[in-house]
Image 1 (cartoon, rainbow, N blue to C red):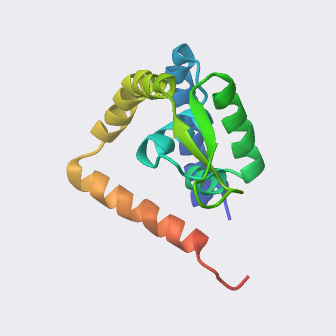
Image 2: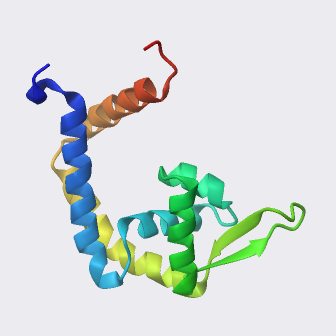
Length: 144
């Protein structure tokens, strides 16, 4: 199969370009793309566990633990023991973390809006549906 016909190559190129653009946008805020993704998820889901956060951000638990350690060292998150499940740590943004998310969003959202503006509303709807189909296929159990 020629490389030009491989959807995975085109998807990977797009993801690399998006990550690179976001990394450049976030650099002045002092956050990496994985840190930003974790902070966004924590902003939406305060108290989430590290394992659930890793799944939501699409990284391995060890990678997420490194991200969380860095965020905690910067004072952007706090981890506390769950009230009923003593072996589960809940993760929440600190006030400083919330400020960091807002500063990062001010730089990342224009990038997302600019990307969206490259498509008509109907094209965006179609693109989202096509990407969802890609993910559904790749995440589904299938015969080798």
